[in-house]
Image (cartoon, rainbow, N blue to C red):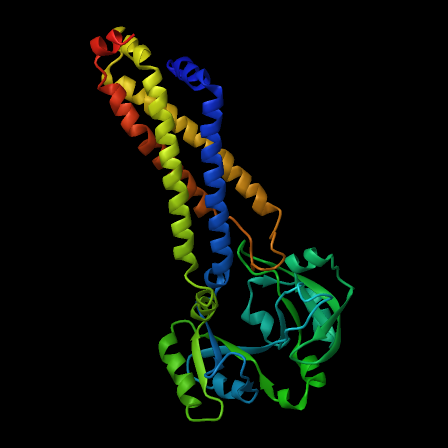
Length: 380
């Protein structure tokens, strides 16, 4: 702490340059955290997937249905604890740009299969009692200003017609990255109004594996039971199922890594050049410090601490601004299932900030440490 006045004098000597350097760190960390948030948004379904859940879809494609009769046969597979099913609806609310996932679900089994989605008991009972009832995720309800009791009109696309639902509940998530954008309504209501080709079919099944059961063996057993049938199945873990959607959009993780690397490399060059200029301007002052008794290591530490302070202040501002930005909600209006900056990303940003600060100040600090007093004073 006794060297703090000296550090403060160095930091305020060129206020504009110091502020610009702090701003460089702040902008870089804001971009890094924003990229991490986007990446987490794409992968939220993968990260939130249940470890004990499997998804059974048509072997040809997800858009091809499966018979409802498969449910009883799936439940007879050794190692299966429970099963539920759902259909993708794909309707339009007011405008085609108002996209959100709409599922027709089995109201008798769906809640037990997905306990991470929290629905008050009274709202779920209202859902069970009303065939036209619907439950929306908290994010979707906030997006459109819905409240319990509203009448929600949706124009069908896959299932033609004008559909109206009574919003009887709003669900929340137990975890920050749970998908709060979905809209559920009862499958029996869908089939009651659906075309003949849809009756007796579901979109996919979700099954829970019993504790201790071999999920791989269960997966093979399910698919083998429907092999060579008109509707063959493909069973995979829920995590793999969710990951397949992310893969369709390309290697998001690699893209984010490349962009982040470019941002930090540019920051390293900017910060390193700034500190090199600062040390060069203070050659005489550093020589005087050595003359009055400062050791080489003390001079090295002074320069390193200076750049680390700049990095940490700028990094903290950037991370703070990014966190505030994500707290406002998803700016893409439903493109991401969740828009959340994970603590791990903030910790990684802080660590990278410290690393860049050390690397940026290492060469200038080493130069200052090796400074020869006589030669430096001769240049004054």
